[in-house]
Amino acid sequence: MPEGSYTAKLLSEGPSRVGQKVIEEAGEAALAAATGETDNLPAEIADLLYHTLTLMASVGVSPNAVWEELRARRG
Ligand SMILES: N=c1c2ncn([C@@H]3O[C@H](COP(=O)(O)OP(=O)(O)OP(=O)(O)O)[C@@H](O)[C@H]3O)c2ncn1[C@@H]1O[C@H](COP(=O)(O)O)[C@@H](O)[C@H]1O
Image (cartoon, rainbow, N blue to C red):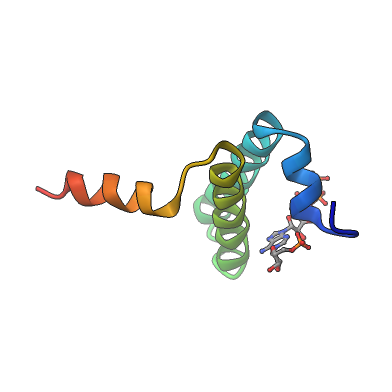
């Protein structure tokens, strides 16, 4: 594991732990939006996106697979 790497440590804990972080960060982002704390929103959303990408890596889902899914939904 790369020394001092948060990402490596989180990945070593498995998808369930990464998923918990996604839920936590989604809650923080939603709360910031609901309470009008818009100054905090970019940081909260950055945390959410980072942890979502880490969750994808932990289960082997590529960004391209997600883009393809979104593209297929276009009506
Ligand atoms: N973008 C990010 C990034 N966003 C958020 N975080 C970390 O995510 C954690 C989440 O915040 P919390 O307040 O929940 O932190 P915490 O209490 O330490 O977390 P837990 O103990 O609950 O797991 C913080 O420790 C942040 O530093 C990130 N850690 C790393 N990156 C990037 O990932 C890449 C690899 O970095 P390393 O992970 O350091 O190798 C680099 O480009 C980094 O900039």
